[in-house]
Length: 539
Image (cartoon, rainbow, N blue to C red; front, side, top):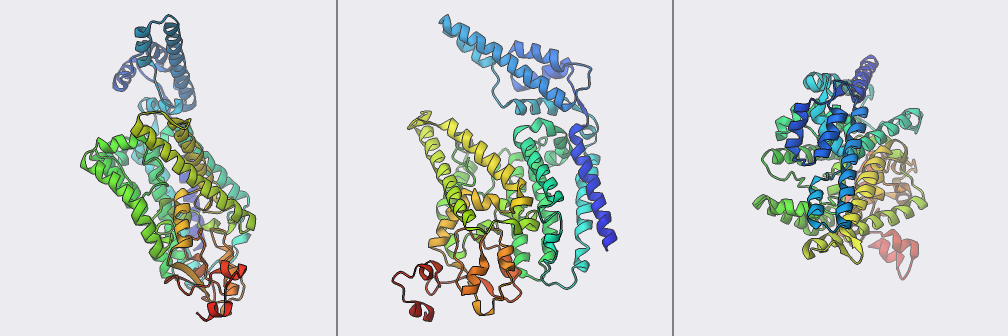
């Protein structure tokens, strides 16, 4: 069986290597005819832009993606600067007609995104010409190898009981060399995805046939991300099924997050796009779906007829009514551990790293400050955005709508949720984003802490203080401290993943949805203010 595992690891590494090296493969250039078609398709009106593109990318030279991107970005910058100079000139001459005409020649957009759009048309080589074969040599081989590495654990792990031995003896799971390599790769992946998509355009060629089948168009970097997201969750979900096969709760929970991610977050939006409807993830609630109330989204929904109106109403009802009601009855676990895509990736890909969550008091203090500040930031951004949308102004109390949206998208949407939130799994644990940054988690946690039937009950008399529960709590909760005192665990941050209960050798912990009356609230015991402890314990 170990031979099969090593063989699987070999297949995975080969597929992973080919996929990574695809970035450096192929070449990019345009013929004059191809350039004319592209400019006509995009509706660019600037003759200066056409001249610059003719000089830079219409060539027989086989440019790498890095050379091609550099030339394209320089071209757009040169063309826009040329028209800005003319705008300034006509402005000083008070020639308003000429000044107004010049604005139509400028091209807006992020430089790397503009380069990506052209690279999709200009790409040539194996990954563009043979996408199906390329898929099997990369993703196909990687998935096959990963499963071949994971499946023998059904036998190697022995009987279906708790198996967490030696986790701190492995480089991959104890912040060793392999863990740091994984961190670096994930961080670079997210940086390219968010900020330099043109550099990974060869990856999108691999997924073009699948994208065309689902939504009728070629793959973008976001389609690649969505597909990889689902594929990784499926593979690591198989690992969860094997590791926790003795625990029915974990089996059902893993199945739930896989279903909601693959069907609701990936397939349904892609199919909706193919039907000329706005692609929407019906499980994604505000403020996690922070751009739901952005002007472009509201206008898109308004222009989409009945389905757009339904999505708008559904999004509001989901946030204001469904979310708090569900949290009252089931705790925030109904979303964070059973539905959410971020939580799904954390529970599958991030499971080997859950022991790295910081359990210190300082981390808890930092968590409470940061996550609630992000929630306030998201609410403030939404208020400014909606005010500007309905009033027709560009700012509220001096805060410009575009600035606050761009700032939130960059700092929270890209860096915190993506680069840090996922990239830092191997070193800081698998729920960095959920614990410190997710504004929806803060909203859910607030309801859970003060008005919810969910709690984790403890039987302190049977606790042997082994520490498994605290070690594997991904939210940094010192579960053992509660268990030793027989206190119910009622914390805003608890996502109800149930791993603390799953790894407990004595059955001390139990996840429950029960009446609020009769709970042993640790705040009252610790403070002892006007509390009849004997009456509380008897109750």
